[in-house]
Length: 205
Image (cartoon, rainbow, N blue to C red; front, side, top):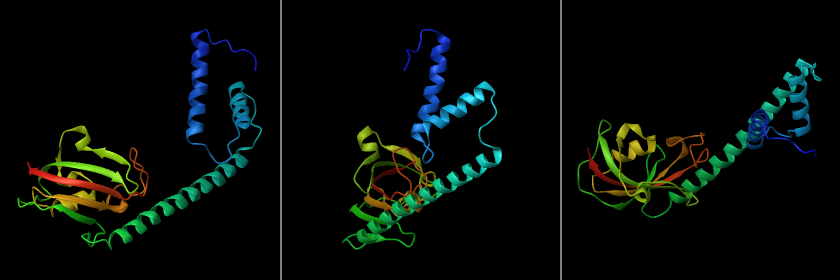
């Protein structure tokens, strides 16, 4: 490769544009993406040359690739959902695990004797959240500060559980994905994830 002179602002910005495009393709690559073809299309468009592929053929190929990507995504989601369902089925047979009609599971770690919040209340809690493999995605304990929020302002599994807990209680929740974030990835939480929380209800605000 010949030496590339990146000493000017214009050259560095041009290189940066290429880096951004390359990073996007690296992080979200269409199946079978070919760098040489990407560069050819970029060069032809930039130079105002006629497309080497007809619009009809391009649209047809984009449709094929989109359908393939969706099928791969659906298969991955189904695999992850099945893993969560297997975990919950096995977990529900453990001693001390209660399973509600919604599918939410909980285990009472410490029983409190204070009042129970309603959906209209706000609460103060400490919590520790992990995936079923034990990896931590959020923890007020690690931050060293309790969290405050409306009972109705959290994931459905939490909203349901909090209304059953007495102040002073500490429960372990096993939240099915449909009562959490469903097929959406949120931060370090993958799609279709069962979430495990240790939740300590400190006060009703």
